[in-house]
Image 1 (cartoon, each protein chain N blue to C red):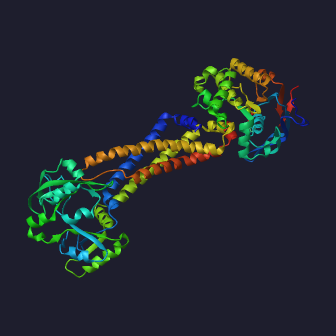
Image 2 (cartoon, helix red, strand yellow; image 1 turned 45 degrees about the vertical axis):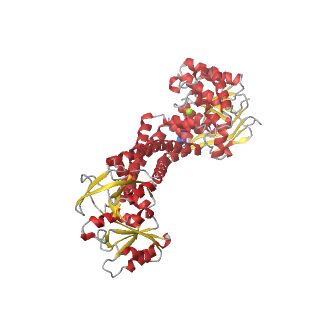
Image 3 (cartoon, each protein chain N blue to C red; image 1 turned 30 degrees about the vertical axis):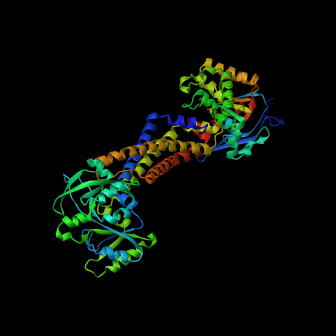
Length: 234
Length: 379
Ligand SMILES: Nc1ncnc2c1ncn2[C@@H]1O[C@H](COP(=O)(O)OP(=O)(O)OP(=O)(O)O)[C@@H](O)[C@H]1O
Ligand SMILES: [Mg+2]
């Protein structure tokens, strides 16, 4: 169950009184204002909200890419808001898979090499890495495109490579920031289909930002970011 | 090593730019190598000079002779183990441009004094047995095709007339940089057939001391021994003597250092700019690496390694090119031996590494400091 009232106990992701302020010149922007959130393993949450409401900010905080101004984020018992930058990097490698709107693949690496990147940080042998990469590329339906470079792939295919990269190290949860934002309707549907399967067949936990109601429909819960806090969709 | 694919792929990103930067290193290191070879050619005499040998010349100047009688007196001084002498002949073989130094030597002791010049016993015996015989350095012999048994006419300039010599021996240097261009013949031959003005005189003496640490003291003793005589002496270590000789040609070292300094500074700017551009262009990619879990230090190392790899590829090729060019220089400028001393090879590679690292430092630092959220927001 996804909750936003801060009363749940023992959920996978637990956010309490999260505050994020940005200083822009003399002006202070109070983006997140005491936000609470609980997400359990296997949940699929969609965040919606107008541009500038702080959706990306929230994902960055949840993924340990940025640090809160106040409040706590606890994932599987680790309070990540208390970790040093160095520890946070290691934590990200183990627990988070990122999917971006612009795919963000490395253009000079093949699909295979892009997906292998997170595994290079593990102790896996070359053969084991190969097996993992082939498995996930198969899962996203790109087994025959492994040696292709990003520019030789369509946008939808690039995003599938990016998803393969996000799941290859089997992270605790996935963060997706407008994963279909740059795709046409058909490719977008395919990507959502894939994310659906990751949740329902492979038990992944997914937190996704989207502007697309069709994409949000597939989530177990849709939360609106409004004035710095989350509200459950009616 | 598993990260090598990533490193290598980055170099191939902008092939032309990478190639040009590698090319800059190639040219710079090649130039460095050639300069080092030129330096070595001028200074080889100094570098290989024996530490236990002193050169005794006339205090007035190098071209003023010393009496032959000094030999016995030198030998009597404490600390002196051996004495030999030589005289500049200054002859011309066929044409003014065919320069190689000719010395009239004291046959008995000369070979023992300069063991770095290897001569077979048989050839040396043949030389000793022929008053008109001569010994030719391997480089000069190669250049004019001299073989043992050849008869060589040399036109005297100081000692007028046509002189004829029989090639009896060829010597080779045993160390890199040994001068293989000299031509030796018997002082006795000059004494018997030369003009009266040089009878009983020699150009300079070379003295071997028993203990190299006492070379300075022995040198002072020699000069003191002949002080207030009609031929006062100036004694210097062979090394200093060779250095003074080179100084007459101007300050080559300063010139080479200046050129080398400018080249490396330019190289640093060029490479630094390349790396800075390369890092700026892929801010987002570096941010993705960090997102995925690569540490700041890894990203620092990655950029430094790229810079280093570019530098090393170009640098090693450049040094190799210089090694290949050196013999060509020797051919173009006969009379000098160009080669790249091992120490210069090592220095070239060290400089390459230093420039590579220095050029990558600032871009690598900014890549390390890059914050993921800022970088991803910018794209
Ligand atoms: N580093 C920063 N410095 C200053 N202000 C920032 C910074 N990052 C974000 N902001 C501001 O915080 C607010 C929330 O930004 P955020 O990117 O989280 O919005 P968003 O909901 O993801 O918007 P969009 O739907 O357009 O992606 C915006 O007003 C933005 O300008
Ligand atoms: Mg956003």
